[in-house]
Each structure stands twice: as structure tokens, then as C-alpha cells.
Length: 217
Image (cartoon, rainbow, N blue to C red; front, side):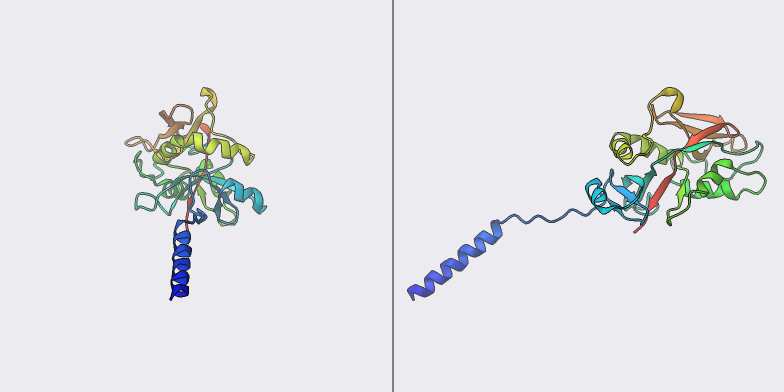
């Protein structure tokens, strides 16, 4: 009987010890600041350094709601060269013109598909399509989202050898893929990565752009 009690006490001690033990469970959830690689997987910077993979973009937003397409967005490591939104004026390129819509992908396709005029900007981003990553010009709302996460993504972009989003006034303006409502035949929105301001601009002016990528599982 005494021996049985000793065994039960030992088992109880083992169970209590097991309950108190701390178990480290790896956190594999994708977060802003993670690196999107050419194989389509997003990983932390530490994992990226150990993996030998090639970086293509940095995650700046995660959202599994219906507000965003896919599971979130990543920003390309590099700017696109200066390009015009359209090669001539007088034609709407049929973007939503909604400054609150997360619809850069649809807008970029609309720019590219407009028959009456061409879009050097849309053509330049379509030329980036490789590794299965479909980059596009962010809408005004998506640029606003990116701007809000600039302090998170810029250090990671720099570590990956990319172009950080600038603060300098004469180098911070980027095309969005959103035309100006009621002026779609002539103007689209520029967005300042330095101040978060927006400016309606003639579509034939050349400006740089920063592509983004939708995250999909």
C-alpha cells in the first residue's frame, strides 16, 4: 500500500511539472516586415537569411477580411522608372476613380486594356510579371496603407538591397492607379511617400511608381 501511494505521488509530481513546463511554439504567421520571396513564400528576415532564397517584396499589410484582395499586400523592393500614366489625354482608362477602394490590381488591368490609348506605366509593371508574382500599381487607398507602414518596411527593404520609400520632397511622389473622379480623361492621383499628401496630375506627366503584390495562400 505504501509503495502504491509513493508511485501515485510521483505520477502527480510529474503531471504538475509537465503542466508548468513552458513549451515554445514557433510563430509562423506572416506579419508586416516579413519578406516575400520568389517562390511565393513570406518569411521573417531571420528565416530569409538562413534560406538562401531571393527576396522580391516586403509585406506591409495582412488582412483576411473581404476588404482586401487575397490575404494582404507586399511592396516591391524597387521603384519603377519614370513613366506616364497615359501617352495622351482625352480618354478615360476606366479605373474606379474611388480613392477609398483597394483595387489597384483591377485599375492596372483597366489601364493596360484601354484600346484607344496606351499606358506606359501599366506596360512597365506588366513587364515585371515573373516568378508567378503579379505586381500592379497600387490604388490611392493602397498607397495610403503603404505610407502608414513606411517605418516598418523601410528598414527591411534596405536590408534586402531595395529602394526605401523616400522622404525628400522632390523625390517622394508616386503614381497611384486611380484616376481623378470627373476628370478621368485628363488626370490621375499622385501620392507623396514623404507626407501622405495626394495631388491630381495630368496623366501624360512622367513619374515613378512602386508596384505591390497581393498575397495569396
